[in-house]
Image (cartoon, rainbow, N blue to C red; front, side, top):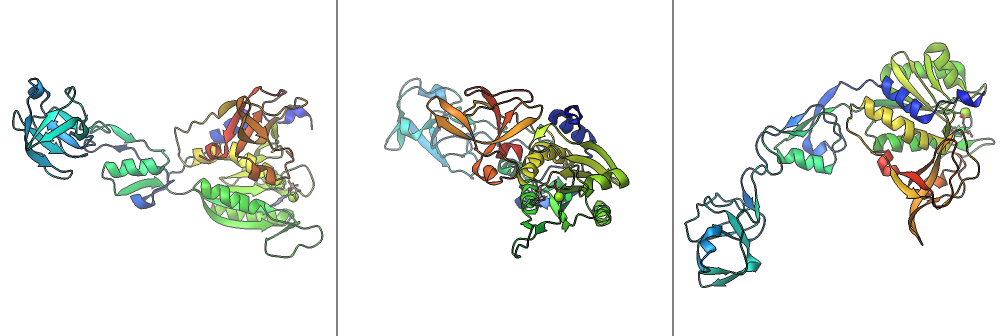
Length: 404
Ligand code: AMP
Ligand code: MG
């Protein structure tokens, strides 16, 4: 097949994302269980956060103007965090703690370290300005504003924010139901002895890990023999159960590559063969209404194509919005020999060299060497038709960013 038949990676991602149908099923989960879920609706702020002006420090509330004369101020009261707020008597101070509500009439808080206590009064060392050490009502979130938008994936900080506006139950989209189908007559489950010509099925576990990280629910997980009818039947069964089918292997040009053939015969094949290294033999299509992401068979290719091509599609299907992530530009600590029409994803790490931060590449970049990905922290990109010389800036994506 001519090189021009390979689809560029960007085009492939656009193709996939354009075909993603965002999930509409939603459910309510307890805030406690909401981590990594996707908000199914906007959350607006029901009441100001914080609900009242409060102190940022342990100290004394005063009216700044009362200190002009430099005389000591008597302490007329005390408010701990959680107690109702007091009214400041003019010409006095109120003892406060971090989080205490500011007494009405007070306009500044003096840190206790800046105060000398003598008898039941205080003398202030240094200047006091209006508003100092006061955390204003609504400074975090003001009533009526948007706290979090539908499509936001809930990280620990979003859990906290939802808690801060008093949300106990959260509306989230249902998890995407995914079928995982590995293919190959040579595959044996770990735990079984290996016969002649056999290898262990590793892609299944890579995919289960990736899907768990992506917040998907695996509803079916099977290893398929290289047989046309069995492949067709299983794909059709999976299509009835899942929102998305992910396969590994069987999408190359050989006569044992039945996934691609079944998509062509019984479904629809809209994308096949990408200008990506690893990850050239990748297919995308549908069986019935269900999208099928046909990943390559090689263990590194599965990982890379899932992260690079699969994740943008999955995010779109999950109804997620606002995901950025453009990688980082870092000098290459490696070089490449000849340019390729395929974009190369190099298993790489950030490291500190004599000239600062640089990207180190794993020596063996074969798509069968999964240990390269275990050594690596991310992927460095060698663009199409480009040669990298030592020190050239390369785009580096951490695995964490790719799986966000
Ligand atoms: P295929 O695309 O089916 O020709 O597979 C490409 C290469 O990946 C072959 O060397 C397969 O043995 C290997 N492979 C395919 N599926 C798996 C799997 N589930 N686990 C480990 N290796 C695999
Ligand atoms: Mg195969």
